[in-house]
Amino acid sequence: MPIERATQHEFWWSGDRTQRFWIEQLKTDAYGDKLTAPDTSRYATMRGVEVGDIVFRWYSERHPEAGRRLGGIYAASKVIGQIRRSEQLWDGQSCNEIPLAPRSYLRDPILLRDLKDLEAEFHTHQTALATAVQPSSPYSLCSSPKPA
Image 1: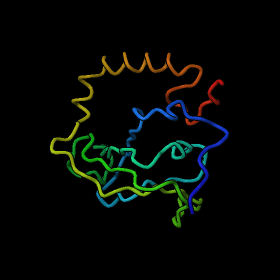
Image 2: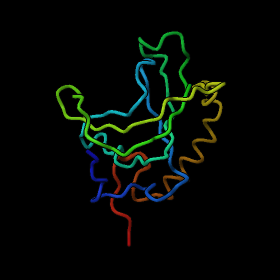
Image 3: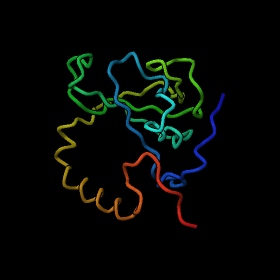
Image 4: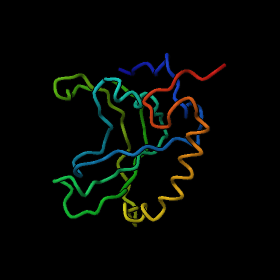
């Protein structure tokens, strides 16, 4: 059953088709056909995910199940359906899920060490974004409604 999109909040990226990218941290290759998270305010950004968005699949080398991978983005998936209630439970809580197309592995992963080389450039963009989306935080789960 589809879930209502967030109506009392707008995300700062709402309506901006250039801001349709997400990162999901994966523990193993066993995950990947959907995004799943508890139906709580902590995961409210799931209500901002739209069909056609791209989800980059991040593997953390610090996770014990990551195997021999270095930290980085190894694959991407496309969102193929809207947020809906999941039959799964997360620590006893009801969950939401978003269906994804099978992941496509990158020929060359984007490794954390490579991203660290671009840290100064990212910081410049982060500062510009924070200024552009004020008073909302670029990292907040929900922003206040956009001014009319």
